[in-house]
Length: 108
Image (cartoon, rainbow, N blue to C red; front, side):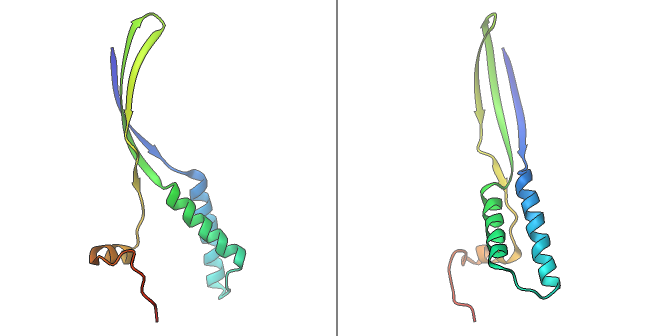
């Protein structure tokens, strides 16, 4: 009989490289007082969605295994859904604390 407990982490490498590339493009345009093209706006949107759908995560698992006969293992594994680490802005935290998160109001 054996048992194991583990902690797992996930880092979406392709998402991180997309965020860096898009951030560099937007920063360079902002420094030169240029507007983003339609394609660059969509790239920024896609990168944001990609980051939301595949954020950095941490999870754990518990595994129990038993070998009743040679070359036969029966095991049971439980893994939680990963706890996601999502970066938030101070404006989002303030809106959440005041209970206005998700409400839409016209900006002036």
